[in-house]
Image (tube, rainbow, N blue to C red; front, side, top):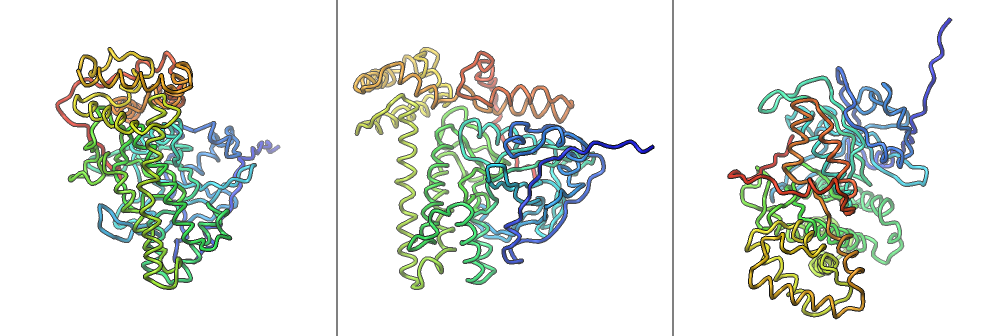
Length: 491
């Protein structure tokens, strides 16, 4: 008698709208199967929000999907083509080690890309092996989920599996695959690719698709393509301001790493700033500081200018007029960014209303932080709880003067001290993914197979504004070091 096997529905509900675009935009390809996959971490809360069955995802059938060994029903796997300016130099790119399984449609009708990162070679691999190692995939999981907890638009991580195979970098490393979730993987570089190697009809098809998917409310505008540009500029101004407000350094702001949806994408050489400095750079390949913390807004403008160039044929039939309209739109970025940043900084200081001297109040504080090498996150943390004696600024004449001005500024607004305190608590994280803590978690996971350190870190980072007792330990600074912290792309 054959025993009946209970079948648990996973909940995959795929649609493949991107695959309906011109064939030159992508290549149909399956992930490369792996030998002995093992589930390392599953984002249960995210899975449920996507309409997926956690129990089924943890089964062998679920594991096979995350590993690329099995294609779920309804999936049409593709690798997307795109281009990009990498450190200012234009090149042909594409998903060299990632496969888009399709778009998961949730019970509420939302649409999210499901992508396997590290799932094998594609036609865009440019000589790479198409694989990824465990450390960088866990790093992306940690940082992307930390960004989500901080309220910053981001791609997210659903799962990480090991492949049972080694990959060769400087040494042999354990292979891994990350399942990444995104509103879409349409990038500035996607438009650059189509603008460079396709025709006007296909460019229009991509723009129309993008509008329908992300900005359907503008499709009936008088000039929807100019509106598209403005919406992307608005989204990036908000996003980069949020980065600056928490001290996040992306590290590789190439145009292929700027999404049209306004999500943060690509967590290769990223890190969070400890000591405040506009010159902060972590990436080992950013030798000249192009993507330093203080440069991120300007790079945003540069990238958006490249996006605007791709849209010129759609914005207006007259080239000069198209350039004028696009330039005016891009010029708005600086004001939009500044307004977002100022609003965020006011909130970090407990200010509800606006006064003309607020900008100098803010600039004076961060100038002192840079001058005296103050920790960015903890300075605002101590201001939130009025424990300035714990900062390196205490006792400095200019800080004493600044502190009195700030207190007087708080007194001039209608809101109470308690209301200001709550605003500051909700605007200043108790914890960030400190670099030494991230490295501690990755070392335990990769070198010892101990994932408990990472799990504790993820738990602490999931509610960064809660100021819970267990977060105290994670707010401490790293031990002094003579070596600057460096991050790597992990490709």
